[in-house]
Image 1 (tube, one colour):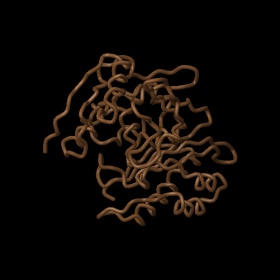
Image 2 (spheres, rainbow, N blue to C red; image 1 turned 120 degrees about the vertical axis):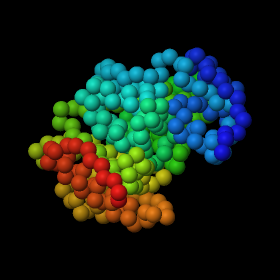
Image 3 (tube, rainbow, N blue to C red; image 1 turned 90 degrees about the horizontal axis):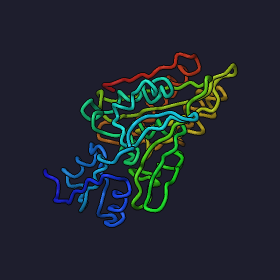
Amino acid sequence: MKAPDFAYARPASLDAALALLAEHGTDAVPLAGGQSLVTTLNMRLAAPGLLVDLNAIPGLAGVSEADGVVRIGAMTRHRDVGTALVRERLPLLAAALPHIAHPAIRNRGTIGGSVALADPATEWPACCLAAGATILVQGPKAERRIAADDFFLGLYTTALGPGEIVTAIEFPVPGPDAVWGFEELSRRHGDYALVGLAATAKRGDSGLTALRLAFFGVADRPVLAVKAAAAIEAGDVAGAQAALGDELDPPDDPVTKAATRLHLARVVLGRVTARMRDGSVSEESHHGI
């Protein structure tokens, strides 16, 4: 299939892009990397009247650090997130990066586009939740800072208002006692996750504290499993696994049933938190599930 007819604009400034979005309202959509949008256009699942291409706007890409915060511009390509700075300061993101689709998509897709789309089976939204990130958005009137905890509202639904654009994501730099974990299960490398977990915590003599468990692929949005995290901090792994039955809402599909996804989530929870407790912090992936 071919995309429906649409007008195209490539503004050279953020103000110009915001003005176009405000003028055309819901008939206009921003274009970042296009890896999801172009597919929906070609399948005629979307038919906007105007595409507002953000790729010529300066200052929306790049990775920097200041005052204990790593800032990643929204137009930073997936591949370019993997800088030495991110590998050192935000190893959770570096671990998640290779799991994002395939090299061609990582070369074009953007972190801001992924966060704004809010696909519940993708890695960056869950990493934002686990890391306690802040999403920076610019609208026609003002900039807003939205905690990741408040940003993802449902299936492809976020706290973005009309005419707003994600401009950057800010991640607090973890302290010296920080640990992290990442694991994703998929049928094949590059496929959408059947279940995934991005996690951060502090590790001390008494175990894990400040644990954040962000699951993806098991609900209509990335989910912070608060009850499961509390149980893990109390040393009750079985209780944490049981709590996932209340906290997750995995979907059925013709191949993988909801009960299977929930079982896999419990397995992943046990694996990831065991590595975090033991200090063997790493990422793992399993395919062919």
